[in-house]
Length: 163
Image (cartoon, rainbow, N blue to C red; front, top):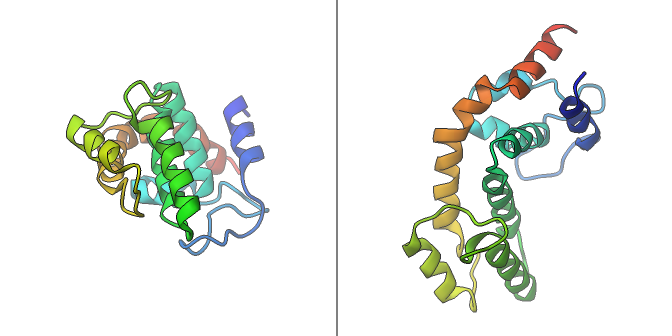
């Protein structure tokens, strides 16, 4: 088994997830049991902890890991319940991904970036929606088809087939 397969196995949650999506595909018995379903849609990959990890490893190999990290940060952000936590998290997302020269700057149009910048002092739960939708479509349209052809995904499929 390769290093990234080990990493995915080690990184997976153990047991059921309590997320809004119902169940994760990762269970103690076979954390990669649903690998075949990932080819159905990018949503299948993103709604599954194991899928997120595998997709992230792939994006890392393409030097575009910031896309999934931003998307995941936005998903967490939308679950926030308190204003102080929202402000803190919004500023963290902004400085990490959105502002010009951010360490993991995402590729969004200047209008979207400007809009977020102008409203960051008073964030709402929808502050990053436009940028997140753009990054989602980038992931779905560009990265996901390459992921399905990648050694990472194909290796996980073969690993499951050989069981």
